[in-house]
Image 1: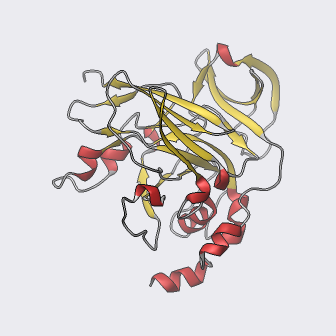
Image 2: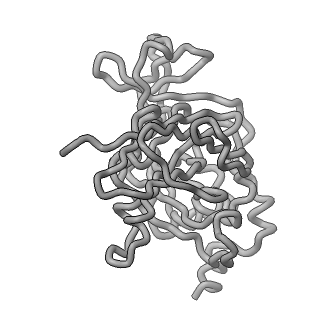
Length: 284
């Protein structure tokens, strides 16, 4: 079954994964999503100036409105409005703890509502005792994708940003629960941003994670077992991807639990820096 599927979609060898193009040669463009006076907008970022757009930048006809705002004067939102958020489990050898990698990507979905704004707190819930950080790169889909051949997959990637996949290990791994939906997808668990960048190869960026300023994770996405081109192609054979949907890289290295008052920082080198404060969830 595994081999027949791989033959159908052309996911044949590690060499092909390593050499497949992952981004069109293009100018680097930076985007943010933000709120002013209760109204949310997309904008193109030049320096510290935001040029408001008529719509999301991946939509046909998106253009500048002529209105501008200073970065310091707006509330930044997650630079995505996904209908589908696809996570990748165990996608770096450094995170496997000596296990052999799987023949297939470890896919799971989280609710779009778990995608949180940059700078907003990630909550530790009342029965949570092992909320771990996971520094990741996140790609956004730029066009509708269904049954995409591997060699064309890079054309469907619009841009890349930073993400922190908050993972409550107690919920995720305990025997009487046995699933990851709550442990990986609770509200606030998946902040991204603040900047979405187009024109950078997401298959060759360095992920850096820092706990309270101390580096805890560092690895390049070129080390992914299944790179982003592969993931777009693979996922699109089972789930229709729409513009704005997200695919996460998986995390490198080891992770540890966080406590209220901690700040976890995820940097995608040359792209953006995401800072997430950790806080106790407010009483219901």
